[in-house]
Length: 451
Image (spheres, rainbow, N blue to C red):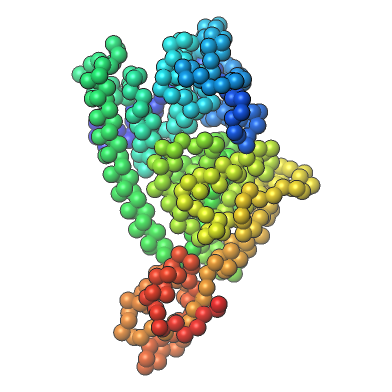
C-alpha cells in the first residue's frame, strides 16, 4: 500500500477504525458508570449528556443510554457481575452489536465484558479516537489520529486487530484462532515500527510548522482554545471573516487554521483556531496532536471560549485549563482572555455570579452568532498585547545589517529615526518571548525603554 493509499484508507475509516462505517448504522447501547466517591467536576447528568453527544458524533443507532451506579470498580468488568448480567440480557433482547462505556477500561475488562455480553465493547478513549479518525480531514490530522490509535492498541494485543490483518493481506495467519505468544510479538513489532514511522513523519510536520512560524516572526499569535462545541470556530469565522467548518457537533474542528486579524488601532495578529478539548481527553491523543497544539504554546495571548449557555460550562472550563497545564501553558506567563460565548442564548441576568475559571487578563461576554462583544474582544486582545510587550529605543550601526534583519523578524518596528553617520535608531516593541534574546543581542546599544 502506498503512503497516499494508506492515508486515504485511514480517512475512509480504514486501518485505525474500530467501527465499520460502511455498513448500516451499528445498534449501540451506552453505559455511563456512576462510581461512588469518584472525583469529577461534572454532574452525572452532564456526563451522560456529553457521552450521548460523543456517540451521536458518529454513525450509530443508539438504542439505549443508561447510568449504572457502581459502588467500587471491579478489576474483571469495571461495573461488577450484577450489572454485567443485566447488560447481557439487554444486549440479547435489543440485538445490540456495540456497547460504549464512559470509562477507561483495561484490556482485560474490555475482553471480559465482550465475552459476557456478546457485544463489541469500546471505552471512552476508543470512542473519542473513533470520532477523531472520522473527522481528520488533512494528511497531518490522519497521521496524528493513527499514532494515537496505535499507542492505544499497543497494550491490547490480546485481541484480534483487523487493521493489521488487512495490511498483511491474504497471507496473514493466526488471527481467527487467537494469537499465540509469537503472533503477539509480531503484532507488537508491526505496531512499534508503524509508530516510529508516524513519529518521524510528524517530526517533519513539526519542522514545517516551525518554519511557517518563523516566517510570521514579529506578528503576535493569538490562540483560540476551548471545550469542544464551545463555538470556537464560529468565533474564529466572525472575527476573521473566514469560513472554517463550524457546526453544532463535537470535535467539528481537528486541524489548526491560522488567519490574520486586524485590531482596532491597526495592529495585525495571527489568530489560530485549534482542536476542541474534552473531559478525560486521552493522553495519547494530546501527545499525538502536540505538533498542532504548538500554536498554543507559542501564543502571545490565549482566548478561552466558554459556552456560557451550557449549564456545565465551569467544569468544562476547568478541563480546558487542565489540558493547557499539561501542555505547559501558564496564565502567569501567557495572558488568558475568557470569552463567554453564546450570550444570545441566555437571559440578561444569567451572567450574574459567574466567575472566571482561573487567572485571566480579561473577561468578554460575546456572541459569535450576533457579533455582540466582538469589538470589545479585539480591544481586550490589543490591551493584553500592550501590557505584555515593552518598547525600546535601540541604536544599530550601519555595519550590523544582520541586527536590523533580526529586529524586523522578531520585534514590531514602531518607528525609525533618520540615519546618522553612526547608524540608525529604532523604536521597537518586544514581546516577552523575545525579550531575553533581544537584551542579549543589543546589550549596550539600548538607549531607553518604556519601563
